[in-house]
Length: 365
Ligand code: UD1
Ligand code: UDP
Image (tube, rainbow, N blue to C red; front, side):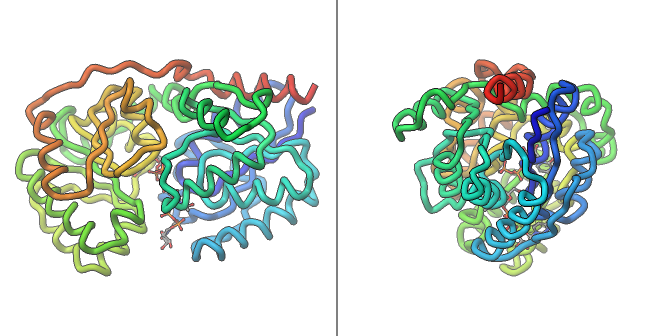
């Protein structure tokens, strides 16, 4: 039996680990233990995803919560070290680029436990993003590097990684979409919000570079104000975004826009149903750039760079500066119903987790 510790901590981790954990259990040859660090802890940022994705309750919950980067990373390290000492796994699996990802990898490396990093090799080239630091360091510690797109292979090769541990396997995030498609279609969120397919734009924002600076955030809100005069907007508020909007005195402006549907963070099924049926997406999320690419939904990514260039090369994604004019102008063609052509990137076929588990079993011998 291959004994693994599979680590999750924040919202984007749950839909990445779910298909891997399931394939491992189905194989009958793996003994996966699920550890939740508690980086995200609100029901709407955490528990609801376990339900929507059919993930079993975590075997261990570390309860680290929020804090500065150092506080959060250190708290995950302390909790994970204790757990790994007790569990003695053959491998630790980490996904994505959040603080919990790096913290778990650092601990495992020093305990000489091999690490598999899922979503390896992505690079924005912007070291002011905390995630970029997490990506570079996690990849440098990992023994198996599972890559979603060609740019990941290119970066790892350029950085001198040993090619034998690198595998282009596709995108586990898309596995979750494919697995949950029927439940997504059946979710009643459109009806509850009184919206019809293709009649609204969906918005998510949570990057510190956009929402932690009052002048940038208020410029984006000016763009939303103008856009909602043309089309209904649905904006599920990330807790960071809700807090900074309140602190900067912007929350009431959002609440008072007549065609704005402000919601709490949404569960996976309602969120993806809204995304799939949106006329336009405006976001700064990593995962949303991939999900819109899969469904061919026009996506404006409110950032100067992306670590997911395939979503621009093949998909429907486009970068847009976080300024009022740039956002408003970039949205125009889609408000009139324009649809970009797109291709789904190679291996984004719902079978990435299966490939990962096969490679891990083969590697373990
Ligand atoms: C984290 C990740 C980011 C990812 C995002 C996904 C890092 C460095 N950042 O950013 O890469 O894109 O998650 O959503 O790991 N909060 C709550 N309830 C919660 C969780 C957070 O209220 O359940 C609030 C707290 O005030 C907290 C703030 O949100 O201080 C930010 O949370 P944190 O986990 O530090 O970073 P995110 O912005 O969520
Ligand atoms: N998501 C969700 N509800 C929301 C917003 C996002 O279910 O209200 C999902 C969506 O599938 C997205 C994933 O959470 O791809 C990760 O989101 P987030 O933007 O928080 O993280 P990132 O990908 O930027 O690290």
